[in-house]
Image (cartoon, rainbow, N blue to C red; front, top):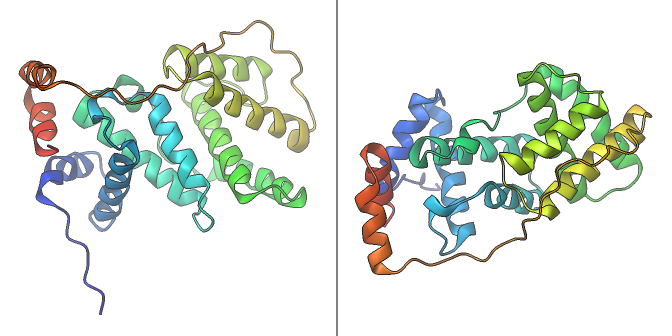
Length: 232
């Protein structure tokens, strides 16, 4: 019989954050598992230096796996959101929506169908579904019409101004939404005009010196300090 994985003690602050955020007890270990995978994905990049691009790149990398399901991508996204928002106070992580409701799922289903009819790769399908779900959540939270080109423009600008994403990440979101409007809705949104485009390139992780780490921990307080020191 396979032995159940025991959550390492250093993740206890995160476990408390999950429970405070309303994650069911039987799902906690799965959320911790995603957080552990995210930390490994970052390699040597400290969690306090993570930007929105890192989180998006992690979800995209999961989307390239052959057997991963969309609900797992959403769960991983939620796990990373709670990790970064609660433990490290990342404002953009706190504003990242959690899983969509059934209405959003009804909208996502036709996109999956069209992707499969056109023989798109599972990786492309998952990426498109991920970005459409993000867009739908964005529109719902701001009471915007999800069939309006103006909403697409606002979403893409929000990714840059608040999410600080790279140009390639913004382009991926644009491609996904363009496909949905054109191939699924049958109403191409055309030229979005001169919207805010990202000028950020993907950056390599920066390793802090010992003195810089000491100064950083000296500036942390409360749960963030506790969690950061547990991860050393």
